[in-house]
Length: 318
Image 1 (cartoon, rainbow, N blue to C red):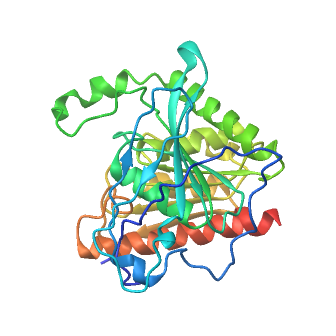
Image 2 (image 1 turned 45 degrees about the vertical axis):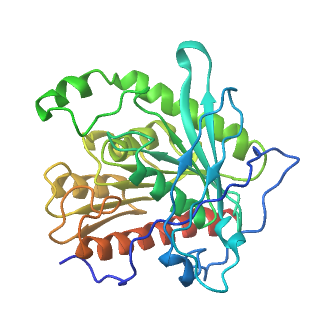
């Protein structure tokens, strides 16, 4: 049993085929999202399923379209309701520093806030990660998901015995530099344009561990808030350098994210840090729910994260 759940289903929301335009001072985003808006989807859309079609373009930095295939269309629902989020593949940096990324932009109720989402070991193209990023964007945010593994994510078909060898090839300095490049791009697009005052950062598993490192290095310069879902390979000794609110979400039965480590970091960070544990939950339940029970806990975890982000980024930026 986890925490009391909302009972709402985990869903895959529909995506828009509308084109995307990058932010600039000449193209300000629309009004902030209402605090009473739980999600931007109507209840009728919950029965829809979306096929994501990320088509590669032959031109660097050209807008890519995200198409929506409705397997079931409710009577009386306008197809324009599907146009909630647009997506674009990006190429950040040049030469050896070049990395790929994907940006989800809220089409409706865009609150002008940028979120950096760091994936788990399965990488930025993984469907669970992209669906979660899309759902965040549905709540008014603009979410950048960088390729932390330079085209070499961990694959489910690889022998587990090879994992340590693979993770050892992911040079921490290179990963940190790629995250810095992604952050700089977001600062240029959102903060420099006078839209966001601070960015938010979210991470799962491998990415959740990197959230702690990023916030410790950043010192509140770029990021105003962070959310770490069952972070792995975390260093509690650097937590005291974090100066912004952090929400830790994990299961109490996750050997990859020990509860005592989370509690130590919560104490080190102090005011603003919060650990939320879901009973009898292991690793990955919030973005990869594998049962109806995990669906409910995943829904509640998402709601906690959404409220945390809204209070810390949208309300405090107004």
